[in-house]
Length: 434
Image (cartoon, rainbow, N blue to C red; front, side, top):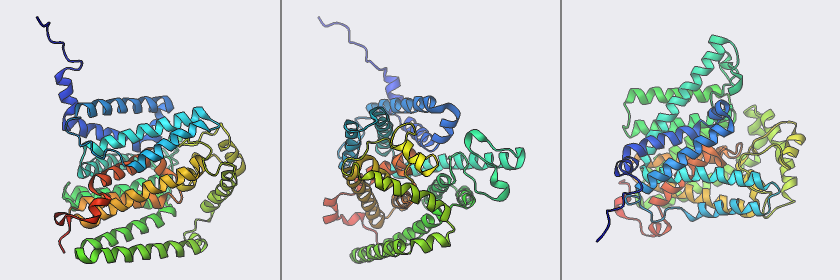
């Protein structure tokens, strides 16, 4: 005789909830909201509260992924470029002089990577755009409300958030994001998301127009010279994609090569004329701060050129060489203010090359998808990557928290829709009509 059937470890009702599209949509909103609100949450709850919230999100995402395992397309789950970079960062604990900080930094990085993979696997691109738009509408509105409260109603700074109430002088402001450059970055990503929502008719025109105005207002009030350059790069990239998408399929490759050549020349001219650009943007003081930090970092890179000092992500101030860099520059830094130099410093030449491959593949794949596929939603990923990568010349946001999350979401979504084998024989139905 057989005994009574053993009850399932997880009741069917709970499994059904975890596997439901509504749960995935809600969790995606929570993940994106958390990633963009880390400065706000750290200021309110400290690191223990922030990490507890992160662990809860990872547990929920794990449970949801297990419940949805039959419906998820596991083939090509993780681009190898992401895996190589993550493995090298994890291996850096073997030679790091601050092993505890490296383990903590790698765990923090892996947690956001897992959340990014979850979002990319369970949500379509348009659903991710909608969720990003919903989250950023709320956070930008909250930022402006707090600036008005501080500058106009209370006439007092909100010290724990770093809000100075400079809105009475029309900026610079930073909202709930910790710095004006972070607000500028978020505002640009928001503007791209809102425009895609409008073009795809995902929201009502009035709501989309108000959202775009909110994002542009936030961008203008930052007074950040960095984002004059970044916004210009995004505008040029958007025009290039518009041109490509309206070009006949047989002529598109020639235009792609022409745009690549023009981009390389523009980058060379910008590098040669960087002093004049800095003077025009009145960014001398910001550049001097970065320049002194970068000079000292280049000197220290020579100590561990191949393997780096060890991964930390966000810099700890209480260990060498980061405490030394703060001492030499006379100010506290949480990053190198340049993502590529930051990677080179922390994980050496090997890590730098693997990171370059990661971002290059993500951008090329997403750019080709946007060029060749008709739905306008495919334009979102390459434009967001342009924002992240151009900003990487002056900030390290792409390496941690919301920047890292968005980079991996774009990378995974691009890998799902584009491979080198498909480039050799593109399907006619994926082509844009002339």
